[in-house]
Length: 394
Ligand SMILES: *[C@@H]1O[C@H](CO)[C@@H](O)[C@H](O)[C@H]1NC(C)=O
Ligand SMILES: *[C@@H]1O[C@H](CO)[C@@H](O)[C@H](O)[C@H]1NC(C)=O
Ligand SMILES: *[C@@H]1O[C@H](CO)[C@@H](O)[C@H](O)[C@H]1NC(C)=O
Ligand SMILES: *[C@@H]1O[C@H](CO)[C@@H](O)[C@H](O)[C@H]1NC(C)=O
Ligand SMILES: *[C@@H]1O[C@H](CO)[C@@H](O)[C@H](O)[C@H]1NC(C)=O
Image 1: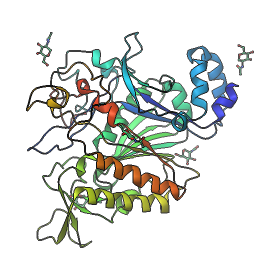
Image 2 (image 1 turned 90 degrees about the vertical axis):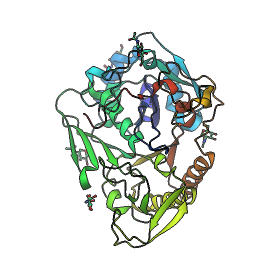
Image 3 (image 1 turned 180 degrees about the horizontal axis):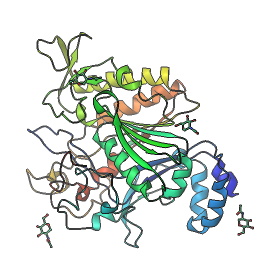
Image 4 (image 1 turned 120 degrees about the horizontal axis):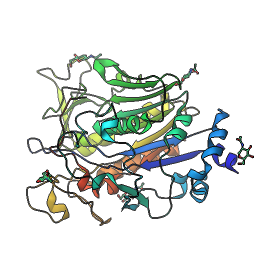
């Protein structure tokens, strides 16, 4: 029985203790800064070849709730809407899944306790889908599944935050050497390696997926967006050999106008550029077409599982949840329980565009699963680092 369960392809999502969302208004645009939502995705994919896993399962079977495992076995994500649900307060000592000061990888952007946050309840919430349960995060089990694999997050700081969280959540389960290094074009590729397990958990900064004037991983936040809408290869060639690919791109498309460079030669940051201006919805549709074509042509579907992280909340307008005008989420300590709420800053049309791109891909036999985080991030107005952070400090 256990064997069948673990042989089946399981996709589990774990929404860990701290969920936080971020994005400040900078110069009156909601410039994405970074988010701190610990929506950690774990894919338990394909077959398990390591026989030690059985010993492990045997000795820890009591830790698992068997009823939950059965639900998980039929590939939870296909049978249950994991993203329709609510946050449940859980202070039975199970959260947070890691302590901030025990994680050596957390950058200053997300170390809110280090930078003065003095409440802690925000760390004790568990995401509970309406239609099912899923097992609690189990670092050792995930480490086994990731053995000899490369998990790669691609996109903006939302996925950067997922990468940070994943490293922190796995840290205590990985014995032996662990190392973080930076490479790729201009340092866009960050790599966490656990050499004894041959695990690589990576993050590639490409906030608009295609080439853009925001590609420098440290020096961005420009007040306009200039992109090469068809040019993805320079970044994407660093993605091909991943076993699990998690994409996201959204926040950087929220300016009304996006500039599309006509010439492949002109510098993205240069003067006298020739460009078309298109509205952001059209540009978003176009970039997802470019990305879809790349995925279709280059990803080995027999090896690689793919996910796309959806639209995140920003919590930049307190009036959305009955707060004061011109305020954001500074000082919020409780989540929102109204699951019907929709932030005024999120254009549902962008979600439709993303959904439709993914279903077009699916009709071509390419399955990229949507991690539909809009609602669950909207609820977490309490989980934003606000001022409790220090950019660029690791
Ligand atoms: C699993 O546990 C059962 C009973 O607790 C035992 O009989 C069996 O040998 C164990 N299997 C392994 C692989 O350790
Ligand atoms: C906690 O921090 C808030 C501001 O972030 C402050 O108003 C409050 O006084 C602090 N409480 C304590 C007990 O330090
Ligand atoms: C390490 O993992 C990679 C996949 O990330 C795989 O291609 C390679 O064969 C593995 N190396 C060993 C020694 O198992
Ligand atoms: C690195 O950044 C510089 C300046 O932004 C740019 O000119 C150069 O093309 C980038 N290098 C790569 C390999 O992307
Ligand atoms: C994603 O979630 C939103 C609510 O946040 C919902 O309206 C939408 O239908 C969901 N999309 C999919 C594909 O499940």
